[in-house]
Length: 297
DNA sequence: AAAACGTGGTA
DNA sequence: TTACCAAGTTT
Image (cartoon, rainbow, N blue to C red; front, side, top):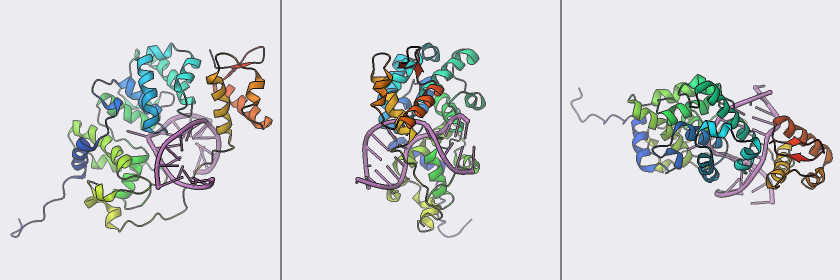
């Protein structure tokens, strides 16, 4: 016992974040009460590398069209690819449909809460599996996405940027989580939200941060990133752009299209042909006996 | 383990 | 205008 005024113990970081989240959280549709694990799974897959603002309208459409795994499993690839719109990485749409079929076959048309069972689903990796268990089923799970890796890098390790994903990230967030299960669940979203709104990649808003007093990076004087700059992947001129253009033609068309129509989408014949092939291999496209191309029925 | 995989908003 | 970057997964 100190005889003088003891310094007030720093409030627990986990609890502080949960309390901050209560007032600062965005009102996102998949966070509303009554949203089931399937709808959460759909949102998580759509949110893989795609910003919230673009996901919202498409997510509403999907959960209205296909409110359960069985409904999506019964849809055709063509319907699913069209409904995916321009969210990007359309293989996600196909995999989500495959996941729906797997849920019907292996889990009675329901979404399991077990992380290993979730990770066994196509297009569901370590992040998504934990996110679905945690946010979809209310099972406390440490969750590590790009936001969390950045928050951990700064708050815990005092580094400006997260490097490549490390196995220790999971342990690092888990160490901050409140013991109470309900609060632990909210903590997992709260850390992501902090990374999305405050501890952002560009210019972090440390003055608005609820845990700036506990931040190792701030304490170190916000040192800049050391090491090689992370290079951003090019897009213009890549096969990704060509595939996007090609698929865009098919999505817009009412039915099968002539090969000539696709030639207008990209000049380089060799690249166009290569991309057409890869789209066929991926099951995003189909070629009819008459040579025309179509979305897979 | 690096690279592929879409798209569009923002600084 | 270019460059960064957004709730990753797969090969």
